[in-house]
Amino acid sequence: MQNSIEIAVKNMVCNRCIKVVKEELTKNNINFTFIDLGKIYISEPLTNLENKILKQILKKEGFELVEDKEAIIVNKIKSLVIKNIHQGKVKPLHQNFSDYLTSEIGNEYSHISKLFSEIEGNTIEHYIIQQRIERAKEFIIYNELTLSQISYELNYSSPQHLSRQFKQVTGLTPSEFKKIGSRKKLDTI
Image 1 (tube, rainbow, N blue to C red):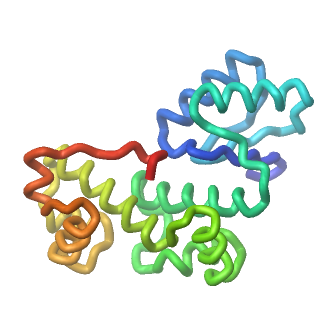
Image 2 (image 1 turned 180 degrees about the horizontal axis):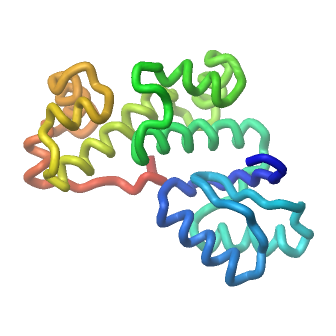
């Protein structure tokens, strides 16, 4: 956000997370301008005391301040992926994630991919697949869309591709999952 200082926060990956952080910051009189996935925006630098309180609040709620430059980039990648998959399409529909992340992060894909793998022990591609499958699980549990509609919604080339990937990740077909379904928390992926 323009004229704001961005603070990166690890594991803040859903709207409930944002709500909890907003409530805690307000309760502790820490001024902020906006809170988004993985980010708190402030208009002026925090005092040492405010910074200490912020760290305590985040730790208490299962989050942590990201202060390392490389970890901030990884956190941003995760937030962009989650926004696109779980909160609606922000990137153009037919743009691939590598081009999208490159333009949003401002670094070559090979660099951010290597950085992500080193820090997370997982590739960006695998992380994207995991997030897409978690979103598919959500759609399956709510039982509002057909498998074809889910595959379209998640930008799969076909329902068969989604089914194949779903089985690879979960060990179950979508219909088997529907019978026993359970999901992971986003911050554990």
